Length: 398
Image (tube, rainbow, N blue to C red):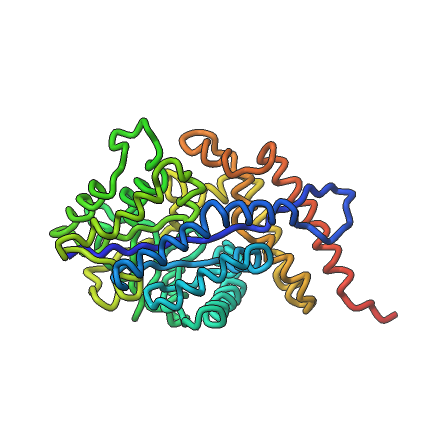
């Protein structure tokens, strides 16, 4: 039997407004733009896809199951600008067929720079999932599936039972992503690795008429899943939720494909669907996977170069985390929240200067005229953050 494990990342950043060196307003975020994007993606993706997932769960009498992680930043925006989407996520939670997992609240790269901040954001998100959906997550995914042995060890120590990451070829070698593994030196943690070929067939290639397998039908994809039998027992399909209706527009047939897929996969009773926790409960780890260097699910390299590929990104990341103790020390909740929103990985992605194999992807998601504009804008805001920190310090006694 091959068990399909669908995991969807739901995320939107707080986009920054244009901020000059002469600006002194502590309102850094382009909320008109953020509201516009939130409502647009809600209409094109979140609402129709959530309704489809609910319909599939009911139609297949609970045998169709999915897992999500929703960042704190998208939840805040949905609660403010598209509360009807949050209602549909609550409806999904009530089915008992949907699992919500934990990540960093602000979709940050905190692990690389501040373990205390990483743990704080993870605990914030863990509590949010309990408060919103009544679930205590057992599974963790780091931002953009960034992962190495050190991440696994810290997550294991926090009590999680599984972690998700990319099934990168240079890590797996001859092994298949269609098994569950263990990280080294972890007593309890299990490792689920994305089957990037099948995931990307849906997420990136589905609407590409130049692709040799176009058009991708549910029947064809179900055959590919069935071929896992004998060489694995999980098919980890990890992707952005915005795949449905936003990255792959409705006119590509993506919703019709998804509507037909569960029935095709479960035909004959050989294959099924599991949440991430159900997968680790059913299947044992078959071996250990050693990941000494950071990997991610981004771009062709599966590394950190999308966020740390140039000196601008490295400088901006260093500078925002250099303020950790000073910001937290102010006790100013508004300042701390603003600073944490500046940690969202998208801000550094906008500074990326990779314009070769992945260039179209980076251009599509970049709201700035150039990566350099993104960097200057960000650093101007960071300078204002420093000023707010200074104003929060008690005056020296003469």
